[in-house]
Length: 424
Ligand code: AMP
Ligand code: GLY
Image (cartoon, rainbow, N blue to C red; front, side, top):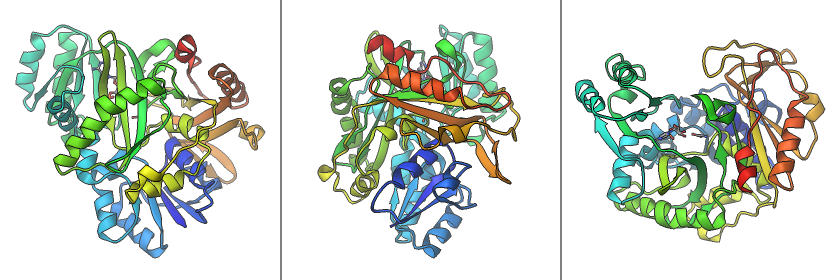
């Protein structure tokens, strides 16, 4: 088989790495890929959002399966367009991807099927939103309803800040049309956990639970990022608890989507907050999580491609995922200044020493190869995943490996996995 992976971050390097291990796969392409994917796949210089060019490429190169990493092409309808051209693709349809593409859609859907979530109000008008905020207690959360590259959720601590934020999003259009509708919601306190499941619309096949670390600094301090590290499995959501999430949250949501003409096929990501009042849904994503994928896929022994094909073909009831009984920890190494402004083009050193290890894999995100040198090109540069027989060993392995790596300005969290140790 010839496989195309769409995207160029750490998640996509991980997908390429896992897909390349499949006995079903002969050739693998990544568009646009990065300095890591280029070593195991053919990087193709096509933007992940350029659906027309991706279709031309898939036809010309006789691609048998396309796997989509990021949300934007899914929300733009890449799946419908590929299928319309007779091309095989893994990812939900445009209607189904709305569960991530519109927070208003997801919140209203959850309200209809009575899924526990943060109490919320939806606004199209900045004056109404500001009037409402005047009467609220803080902290409170303001969210742009549409896609805002992971930056559309802002935790607000005062009315002044709230007023300014509404103005930035709705009047100054900081996130473009994504901020035409905003959600103002209750601030939830607790521990976050992610559950990813494969579904063909009928059967649900869960992955191990995982936990992302959104804030940039240790102890969940500082501004939110795309994710500074993750580990799996997360003891805070064991298999029994995950089963409850499937029955009480995922199944009713998928049933409602099917009834409403948005049957979901693909990977569904549910982000949960474990509050004093029980589990509440923070968000749904229509794709693999980043960096959760970097911690989850290395724990799968079986063939992922087979499971993806069975999802597409509606045969998931016959699929099985075999897990190795290990733990994995992925720590993100970021550019100096990230998530704010940062410089690019710094040379990365030390990766050669980690090559060939079976307990450490370095997944690239913002990197490129240039004249034999590996350079930084993004905020999140590398995701170092270490594995061990338990979480403690995996943490040790990961941080020891990081000790080999350096680039100017590199920074990372030192406490990835610590919450899991407290529970484990
Ligand atoms: P979302 O994209 O909606 O998951 O939001 C991104 C991140 O913002 C989440 O992973 C949480 O860390 C935080 N967040 C979102 N909604 C809330 C909420 N209602 N209360 C507290 N934190 C939140
Ligand atoms: N790890 C968060 C996300 O993928 O959205």
